[in-house]
Image 1 (cartoon, rainbow, N blue to C red):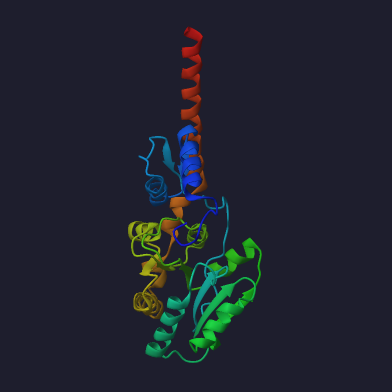
Image 2 (image 1 turned 120 degrees about the horizontal axis):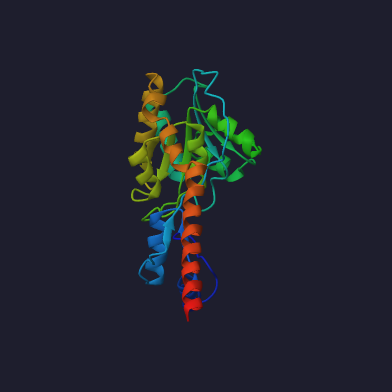
Length: 272
């Protein structure tokens, strides 16, 4: 990964092994083009013709309730831990800047983190003076998490700061299933920014800039106040890109191609 130390094996051995795997594999599947190109650049090889880009699949037949119990509070929600490789400081600083500028009445802005109580996140929220707005819900099942997200005004994605966002976060697929607008703090150049620009579903802000995140948060809040949030930023269209049927069809295409290749090879052997 571009923001970790990666494998502890010697670099030359890692590259040699990875090249051998790529050379011998009959097919290659990546969830994003940027990840595939990153791997090939890292290994200094030409992208093989056998690469297929197949994104993560959404859960089939997942039924979530429409947004209910609209309140006077603007509710943001993030699923999972924030304080690891994903440094949330710029996001929390942006929340502080937003609160200073907008001055919402007490109780009318909340940011929920779904998962175990995150002491690092709570400590940082105190450092930025926004602790009264930040809550940790405690752990939930996957289905309960999805239902909780579906009842939030905006769902939040925070990616690690790096030059290029090569990953398709599975969290983005989960979020898009809810149909809720997405605030994505992501690299300016990256997969998430590409998808939101092409299919809508929210706003991608520069994860390395608190001002950029503040601007995105302010725009979403303005749409929320005007009753236009869902019309402008719902992620239903984005969610269609991860339909499990189309993802399955992608894998079926790979297997069909392999079957034809192997059949052709067997025919050649038979003629010899």
